[in-house]
Image (cartoon, rainbow, N blue to C red; front, side):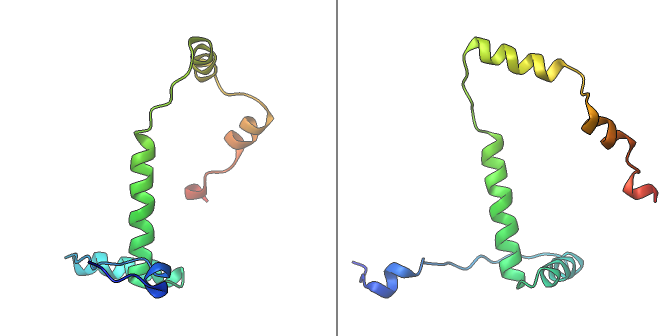
Amino acid sequence: MKHFDAVTASKPETRAVNLRIREDVRDLIDRAASAQSKTRSEFMIDAARRAAEESLLDQTLIRVDADTFAQFTEQLDRPPSGAGYERLMAAPLPWQK
């Protein structure tokens, strides 16, 4: 049986995860982590958690009634328009500057 005390309750249990990656990929991760003032582990954990959350959210089922679904698909089928859209389409492309 595990011993339970105030220190155990306040600190979540952690476990090691070992990965083998190419040196160039590790260097890229290190540069990105440094740019965010994070350790390699902090950066990789944050990135993996975000990817896991996004993956699960992409699989979320949303149920709506027929009228709501019809309104939703009507909006998707309507071509974009408006001042904001026109401004966006007129903006210079960042990779062509």
